[in-house]
Image 1 (cartoon, helix red, strand yellow):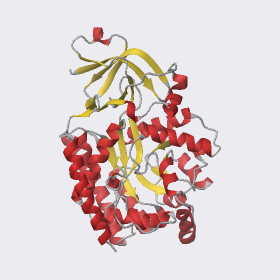
Image 2: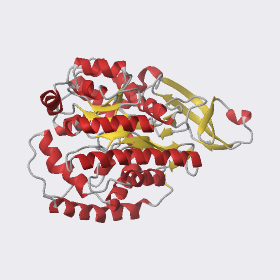
Image 3: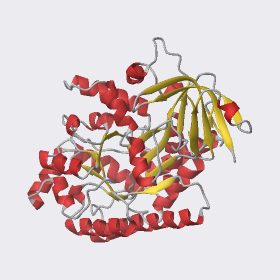
Image 4: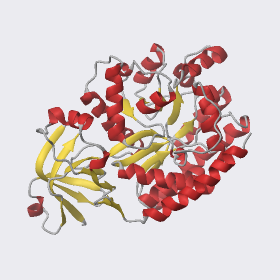
Length: 444
């Protein structure tokens, strides 16, 4: 029996909100087995790590991200003026994803994983695209997750936007191949079970009925759920009404694509029928406040109607402290009624997404839950209690407070240091980024 005790922590749980000072957390292998005072007496053979009263929380989850965008920061490619959302996609993101190759994807995934951990994330749910590098791309991303020790999920965004039916088929095939690869790896038990699969699709406006039928079959074969953008911009809704005469999620549901493992990103312009359907199917909506602001697509005024709400970044890093703040502040600016505790619950809900897909318990500091933990240095200037924990995050606690991160019972980031050497990776990523930018400029 291998037991580690984190001694003298301030245990902070976002939902249900709870603060317990001066307690210990006992971890056996990858699972919490006990939380309480003086656990060393109960487990005398355990190893101990003094935490000096640091804040220890269930791990933070970024519930929608794009690790393929990691080499886009400060991009120096020729990007045409993009006055609206669709032109931004065509001029920037759809050119960037066409320029990705095996090397650039690996380094993009690697630095995004490292930055996620530095920000306090224990898991990221990724949504990937690389039209000229489809087969094997998800395994390359998985390699990056595992090298850093980050938990997560990924999928390939099925679409016909570049090569029509062939691209649809190859995207679905990569999703299925990757899910089966994970199943085989789990049976072998060769590596820690850190990465899972969704069945990915870009957005309804680039997935015709032919693609939805393929995805429907893929869900049955793999027993996974769908991860898709929907109603990020009003164009998606107009396209669906024009070409199919249907609301977005109503159309997806006709192919049995909405269920309790479904992850719908954005959803700013979902109809009443769409929201009712998503809630009835127990699916998730992931809100990406900063991305919506950056793309000038509008604000989701329907957040209070969503049964299962989580938070993501849509590729703007993985700082979930920052994302929660922006989600709350933008909501208040738009006249919304919610307070920080509602957004703390949405942040915590990322762990429920993991639970549904990994068939394990996440998101609480209780026996039987996975030892995925975010550890912070935080000396609160006012009393810290369950009733105001969300307020401390909204107005104080941030990624600069992150001291250590544990995933699956392993400290992958401790005292603000990785066990791997970061500097050579970032230097090489700079070279790879320049080459990728050059390929972007060579594209039509």
